[in-house]
Length: 115
Image 1 (tube, rainbow, N blue to C red):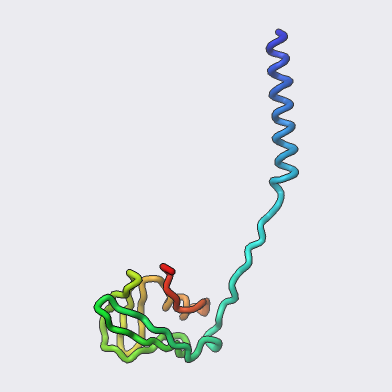
Image 2: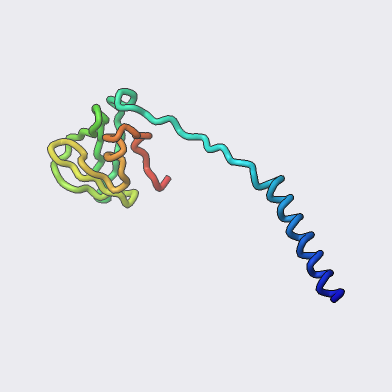
């Protein structure tokens, strides 16, 4: 009987310590700082250079909610393991979703996601 009472008291003490620790340290929320989102007007005319795997350089310009370029239609594999698809002088798709974000108005810049 004595061992059983000691174990009960010990488990109650552990539960109270865990509860106190949760109250003291568990309630703090971390503040996340968000990057400002550029609107279509803010990035109009910005130019970015993309390097293809075969050594060709593609210059794309943000115009409104599209990226324009002067390369022929096709899909180009990039050195950062991405790809872009060009149709009619406009980038219509990219592997990292930049075109989709640009059209949605949540564009943060056309940067190399691998660093």
